[in-house]
Image 1 (cartoon, one colour):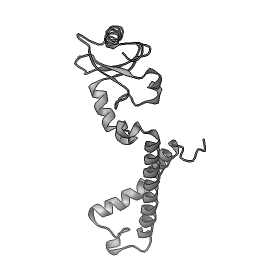
Image 2 (cartoon, one colour; image 1 turned 90 degrees about the horizontal axis):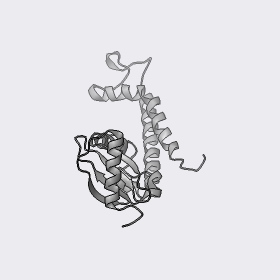
Image 3 (cartoon, rainbow, N blue to C red; image 1 turned 180 degrees about the horizontal axis):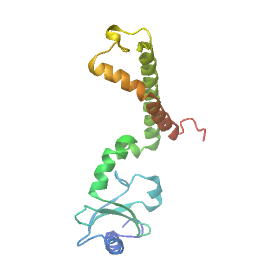
Image 4 (cartoon, rainbow, N blue to C red; image 1 turned 45 degrees about the vertical axis):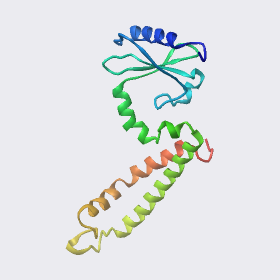
Length: 181
């Protein structure tokens, strides 16, 4: 046993948690004692590590993370939440556990990708505005020299320029790359 709570204690804590929260649990199963996985990356869980992963074997595919230190359930996830989080948060924040466990590397990967995205946006904006003609139009009285999907890309790129730049810049600032805040 590592910490104060063993596997049987984690299963008992899971039964109590399921009963109190109204989750159906017939037979909780201890899956692993782990330091970190994809769903327990948060640094807020560090005081509770290692964590007991317990599957409730309910229709929702609920898995609980029980502190080996206090015995409390510190995280619960369902199969649906894990699926959406994989598509949402993990991709959005570049949050795979293999990278996230190395916080300094993850930090700089996000910073560098944000900077590269901003450079790409700025160069695209410059080219987009240079190629746009409001007065002396292109053939067929068109404002853009492009046709088909390239024309759509040109127009949509200019329309979404401000929201995309704000999104990318706020992502960069959220990493506080130069220690300003």
